[in-house]
Image (cartoon, rainbow, N blue to C red; front, side):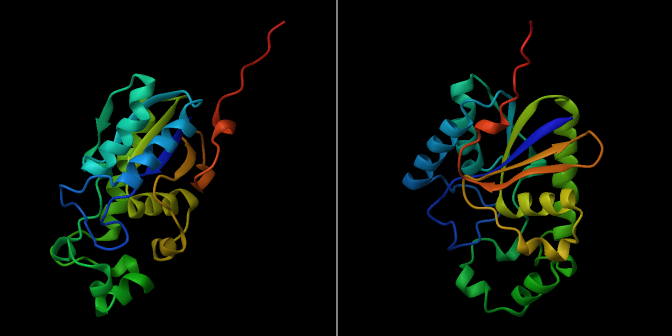
Amino acid sequence: MTLLLLVRHALTEATGKRLTGQAPGFHLSDEGRAQAERLAERLEPVPLAAVYASPLERCLETARAVASPKGLAVRPARGLIEVGYGAWTGRPLSQLSRTRLWGTVQRTPSAVRFPDGETLVEVQHRSVTELDRVSAAHPKQIVAAVTHADVIRLALAHYAGIHLDLYQRLVVGPASVTAVVVGDGAPRIVRVNDVGSLADLVPSRRVRG
């Protein structure tokens, strides 16, 4: 089995304001860098074997904050990149929320293809495929995967066995940790949207004698 820690990147200046999607050039804000530092402190006792990340800057910067104190290199993983929102990329959320397609995204997201972009079914498939590859490469280890809110929510819906149309009910905040055990029968969801102590994720040492 593998313990996957699905980490959402920390804040940027655009988070919650603009749909940045796969556009490059969005870096962590001052508050985001502070969040990433606190995340690294929370993960300090957890023996990570590897840190993977979406290739976008905001994820790589968050991942480096976690990986660097542990002497690990960040491994970019294309399958963890943000949803391809196509023509929606870069537009303000306040503007998008007034479109007809936005309502469909909220009610039946499985039926949506973003203009010139991906479907959420495609995103769920490629992200879970990537996470399956990561877990297979690290049996009996703990691995962090730093990615985006929708990617985590779609993967979590898969692991929980709930229909994709219900994924909007899941909340994943910036710099949060969602923990899932995979590769040993049915997936087991250990933690969702956690921003507190992670000390209980440290494997216990067996007492000999």
